Image (cartoon, rainbow, N blue to C red):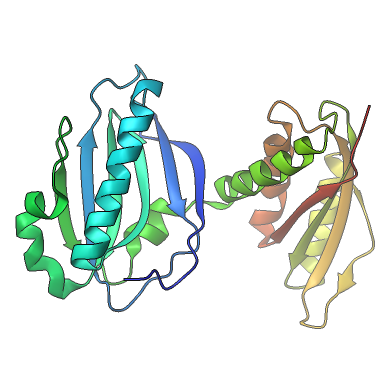
Length: 249
């Protein structure tokens, strides 16, 4: 079937039980009542890295296999592909399939076609609420912001910006009322940020703009955003992102 949303795959890294884990997830996927059966395909890597992730030599063949799996399952069982996970020497692909197509999965080898030199293990389970997608695959606030950071940093770098030079970074967050907004402002000031006057929106939410000098190179954007999230999330704040002026040589 045609995916009922515009796919938007994002990448993030984390750890699972102290093992490195690489996720690629369709951030725009939406639980669909017609697709209540979760299908997971696990493919052991042929030569994983010592940390259990993919070696560069397997990127191309695994990418080709992923394309074939997605194409076959989309065409033959109306599958919706929502993401993959690489950890502990294996890649796992996640799909949602109409329950009525479940019996067809008994002939999975025939459905998938040739997969050599790889072997495919599979698990199918009812998941009407898409809990695996929403509670496991989808990134938490820190990883989601890291994805957004990566996209913005690529745009900034493409302009020729000198990313190692500190400049004023402008941030915006929203709160349900003034109490937590004032508390956030106090904590942000203690962390070296300057804050503007609170602004109440038409929807009743309270906006807080704040600023600090930071550079963008060497993971510093992820670091300062994590610092901000540590402050505003416990106060039920909604971080709306950051922006800055460009620095040229």
